[in-house]
Amino acid sequence: MSSPPKEKEQQPPFPTEPFGLLLVEGGDEEKLCKAIAGPMGWRGLVCWKASGRADLPNLAKLASMDPSFSHARSVGVLLDMEDDLAGTQALIQKILAALNVSASFAQGAFAPGAPKVGVFVSPDDQQRGSIEGLCKQAVRNPALAACVDTLVACAGHPHRTEAREMKGWLDAYLAMQHKPVRLHQALEDSEVFDLNHAAFDPLRAFLQAL
Image (cartoon, rainbow, N blue to C red; front, side, top):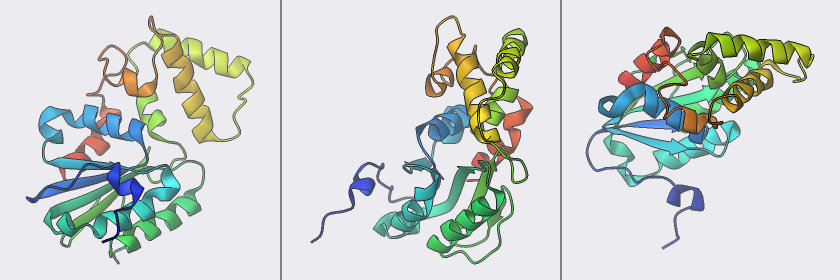
């Protein structure tokens, strides 16, 4: 018998009872979703992390081939828009094809089926950016945010894409905390982000529908 792919060995196993499957780009996305969903909302979900956005179709295919995939009641996919709207749409179609879904993509909506499948693009399906764009809206210190805006303007907007600029902005904001942190650490500290902020509501609703 052949051994399972190494990537699968790094993922949590599927239960043999109904569950919701969440596929994300990486660890920061998992941390964000877990923080937004809360303990009760996270219960009953299994999260698989890809090694980057481009790996999501492979991860989706791998998940669909698991013997216990039949117990999945739903599959949700979270990915960043980045700065390539057309490329993101093409990537979504590859992900849906890997999950044997022929329905067209609609932001945050689940196509009926067994399992139902939905895709959420961050910050949304029209704007360039990433999850950092959502986090920026939910920072708790507006005075510090204004300082970071000044820093970015003074630096002459060094990043070549909007998505990279947003990541750089948030890195600077987090570095100026009393105790500098990375995003995955900040999501565990209620003083950094307002996790109940309206900016997170669409993603929260998506997770609740899983």
